[in-house]
Length: 144
Image (cartoon, rainbow, N blue to C red; front, side, top):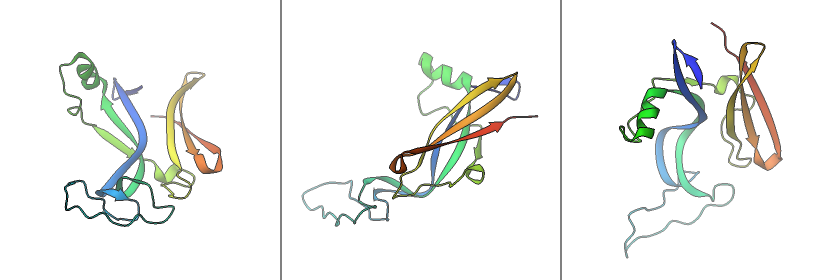
């Protein structure tokens, strides 16, 4: 949670897919989702593109800001889960060491947490690189 524009807002920091999306493999091979007896399945591509799932043209690290009142309305049941929309987002790839998604290493953003040190708020981002068994912490100090 952060104080945004004199209000309390909720933010999420994750990888955000952008561009054309498809269900299939990371190399662009589309897997059919309208299954019937005539469905022809494509050949599964070799590693590292053999994971089937939802993919997109690009993956960007972003901090996405939501109005906490909208999220509270969802919790109360007065708003549908898909109704809250972000009012702002900040692309943070340019601030990250080794940004983006690498299919071989499968690096990903893990979490963002605020830390209060002597009345200054620092935001930490843990970037988890599963294949190398290493993590990297990025820290931001938010100022006016």
